[in-house]
Length: 99
Image (cartoon, rainbow, N blue to C red):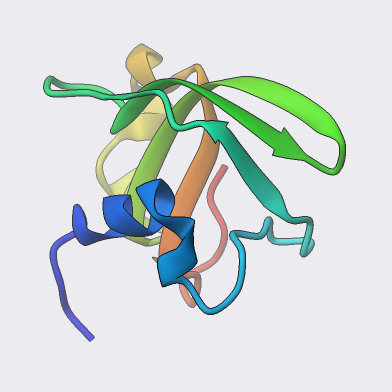
């Protein structure tokens, strides 16, 4: 199913839209305490988010992709602006998992 990447933002901002909560690859539930602010410029999609995963709090940026390999395809692994990404939300992980 093809759709614009920004549609994933809605599932992040309105978690009730999903049939199940956001989860890490090892099935830990992700709680969005504060979604941060949407970035209208180059860099991660959301900045300064606050998240809880397995009882630990994380503050940082959030990046969205339709497939996991887009992290590398878009060059984020070589771009310092993505160094504070704490959550990488992907729709389809068939291509493998990126950080």
